[in-house]
Length: 301
Image 1 (cartoon, rainbow, N blue to C red):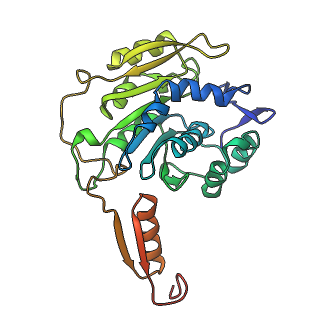
Image 2: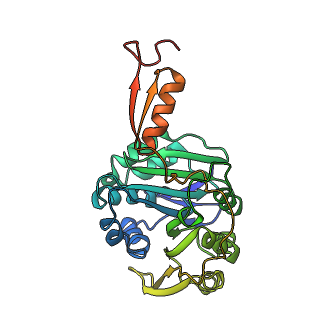
Image 3: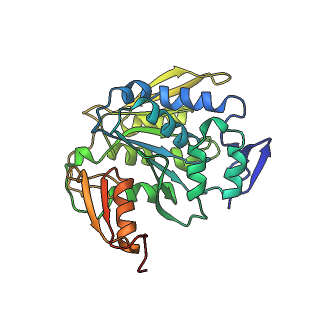
């Protein structure tokens, strides 16, 4: 567990000596920096009922961006569209720490309740946590370099082209570059570019020279935007077709929903295996019919 110091219910990491979010207007700042910076309200409103949108994030922190994403997506995206929010975090907070943070975020219920109900002491690895019926959090616990490599490698059957196995918008939201330089290294942005497509956008709260140079050096087109409040400037970025690495052979990452995923499945038997299988399909947006001869689930378990 990472040690925190507190100002009311706003945490500061003692390891990095930096705040997780602004105690005054943190939600408004996140919406402006990351959601407006990626034009997400407009993009989500234009999705079709069959679209699957993917956000990638450096630094899960308190989960504020993931919760805001689920809330906004549920409000703006058409029925049937789905959101996959893929976030990388090396030092996850404890359940008690998150509960304290969420005391000051009542406007994000029931999403905070949904996350807290599934939260545990996470070891290094990849976890899937539903935030709503159509918004899924994929939480990658571990070092940023290794975690990005994990997202590029899979033994899953390749049911789609490389162009489909990509992130649509990036949130670069680690601690300050001066406090956590590894997360802002040019090689991390190069890895992110490999997971991107022409038209992928990115946004960050930092406009420091080291961040601008790393993004540009990795191949992103960057644009400065006025900051919010005391922040003078923030950055937005975009990938164009000339910046994408040359086509290469790789299997679609396991976290990408294959193009051939069925719309409906029938599961026979509601024991442990059947119930978990039904749940796994449902969390991926597939309609499930569960058939069981007994009156209760898991009756023969």
